[in-house]
Image 1 (tube, rainbow, N blue to C red):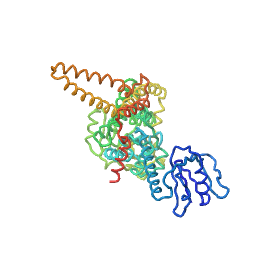
Image 2: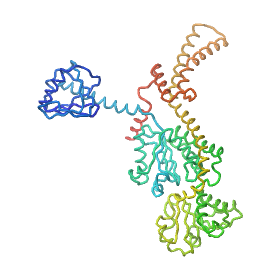
Image 3: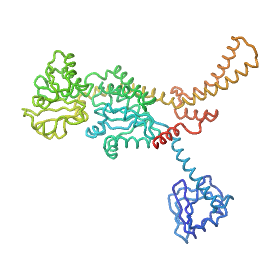
Image 4: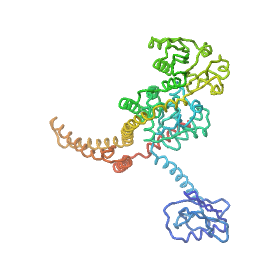
Length: 565
C-alpha cells in the first residue's frame, strides 16, 4: 500500500494493484511542479519497486472528491501534477532514508518559519467589571505582595517576554509582550486558571483580549479614569503608578511594558490637568459615600450612625468623603490605632472613635450604615452574624467596596439588611452622564495623540538593532580606510589629520542619512510600519547584517530550552 501526503494535509491511500496503476500513470505525466512532497511506503508493499524514477508530486486542494480508478476503492481529495526526474531508485533503502530525513528537516523548518514570521506584540488579557461579575474577579485578584512573583512567572512562559499585572477591585488585567499571539494568550489564560483555581472555560467566557495599538489605548483610558466605574477617579492612576513602583527591577518588567506603563502615567496626569475630569465623584470611595447618601433618610449623615471597617487607603478616602458630605461622627474599626489617629489629626473637627477588630460585631450592632474596605481574604460578616444583630427601624445598610468581598453575598437574602458591592456603584455613575460624555470626548482626543506617540516609539525599537549594525558596519569601513589613508600620506599635522578624519566622518554620516531616515517612524512623511520593516529587511540583505536566526525565534527557543532544564 502507498500513502501519498502533502503540505495540504490531504492524502491518497491505494491498494497494491491501484498503486502500481497510478504510479505508472503518474510517471508518464509531464513535469509542472515546484514543491517536493514525499511518499510513505509500508514494509509489506513492493509497489514502489516498479517505479523507475523519483516522483515529485504537487498536490493542490479541490473541493470535490473524485475516483481515479474503476478497479479499486481509492478516492482522491487533491489534484496531482507530477514531474519525473531520473535519480536514485526510490525503492532503495538509502533513498527512503534520505527522503525521510529531508521530510523531517522540512517539517522543522516549517515550524521555525511560523515563529520567525510573527512579530512580538503587546497584548492585554483580562477581566473587568464590564465583562465579569465580582465573584469571578475576586477569585482572580492578586495580592500586592505577590505581584513580583506573578510577573516573574508570566515572563517565564515560553511565548511571553515581558509582563505586568494590574489587579484592582474593578479589574484584573495582564499586560504582556508576546512572542506569539495565539500561544501567548493560551499560556496566560492557563496561568490565570492555575493561580486562581477558576477553570479556563470560565475565564474565557468573561475575559477580553486586545493587541498592540488597542491594548495601548486601553491602558491609557484606564489610567485616565475613562474605563473606571466612576469617571476620572484618581485612585486608578495611583494604582498604575504602584505597578511601576512594585515591578521596577523585577525580571520580565522590561523595556516595552515598562515604557507602556510609564507613558500611561503621563497620559493620566495630562488628561486630568487639561479636562478637569477628576472634579466631582472621582473614586470608588466617593461613589460609595454618594450611594449611601442617596439611600439614607433625608440624604443626611447627621441622622444615621456610621461605621467604617478598615483605615487603609480605601478606608481613609471613605472617611474623607464622609466628612465632605457632612458626617461629623463615626466609628472606625481597624487592626491598629495609629492609622485612625493619623486620620483624626487631619479631620480634627470630626468625632472619630477607634475600635479594635475584636469589637467588630459589637460596633456593627450599634450602626445603621457600615462601610467595609479591608484587604481581608475572608468575609468579615457572615449571614448568621448579621442575622443576630439587633433589629433597626429600617434595614441595616452594608456598602462593601472590597475585593475579595468583606460581606458574604448571602447576607443580601436577609430582610433586615441591604448589601451593596462595587458593581452596585453603577447607580451613582448614571447621575451625570452628560458631563461625563463631554469630558470623555476631550480626553479621547488627548489619548489618541499619546497612543500615536507611544506606538511610534515602540515601532522604532524594531529597527534599533539594524540601525546599530549599519552604523557599526559603516564605521568599520571608515576607520579601516582612514588608517590606510594616513599611512599613505605620511607625516601630517594634527590639524590636517583632524580635517581628514572629519571628512571621513562627514561622508559616512551623509551616506547613512537616507537609510537611517527610512528606518525611523515618521508619520508626517507617511511611512507606515510595514514600509519601515521592509526597508529594514532590505538593508539587512544588502549589507549582510542578518543573523542566521531571527531574534524572535532565538528568544522562543531559548525559553523552551530553559523550561526543559
